[in-house]
Length: 378
Image 1 (cartoon, rainbow, N blue to C red):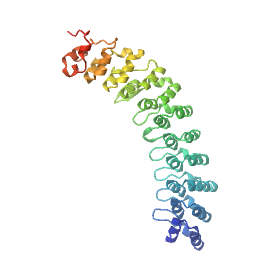
Image 2 (spheres, rainbow, N blue to C red):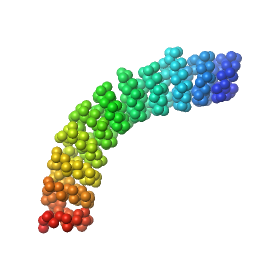
Image 3 (cartoon, rainbow, N blue to C red):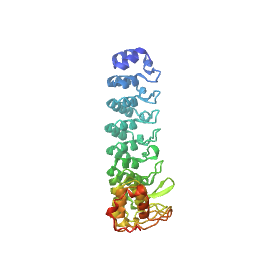
Image 4 (tube, rainbow, N blue to C red):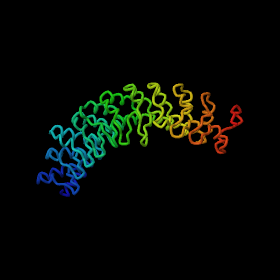
């Protein structure tokens, strides 16, 4: 690029540019080592007047891409000049330069990706209206415009994208738009996605998480309610935990998410509560020291049968587990519950919990024995 033209583009001097173009129109096609034309340079600096004037002389500059794969419109966006970007978009539409509008940069991002990433919802809606095909592009990070919009909780943009047949909903690491709305806890958007693309509720991320499992992990009760109202059998789902299928109640117990567990039971009164090894959500809550969750189970009639359940591996009840964890509050809660059978023996030592408490000094410290004189431990 001619140095004088570069300087004119930097400061937005349309007069100098026109004088040079009058002498040699081909000068406008010159580029910097980065592949930028004078239209790119003026777009970097946001000189809207210069851009309009240069396009009256050579509108083909709208289609030229630099070494980053950016058209001048993309350059204007990535440099924060959204008004200029809108002007260049209008020029492309008027001239029928659809390919320039759909251009993806070196990272696979098109104008709609950038508008949403930058939080410019009005421009995003304008792009969707003028070039719906932008919604189908996926960047090199496997992100669709819809996924980004849902992640940013832009409901109006997300709704418009959902209306476009064939618009992509994929996201990074195997996520989809429904996974994204779970993360945000947006129950309204979750319902709209389920209405338009119900199959997304069955899709798993790369680490095998479904949307319903993510509601449990992230404690998103409102979204969980929407999912279960859509399909109650989602509450019976089991997830892969290091090769072992575990129910949602175990995932809730691990994190102490009592409200999530209650919501599951409201819809699925017989929701699975243990894995194939007999490890229950009560065992899990005890192991993780989730006292509130333990107390929730103890006061929930449909889960009281878990109190004396033994796992398959070593025949230990939740009370055995509590003794092993030396958690005084949980031991006391279990020991004093009227349904607890403290005489049950495990399969490893053949001893009951009371004997283990009595003879293990570090365990004995977990209880004030003067408070439980009624136990006959021999």
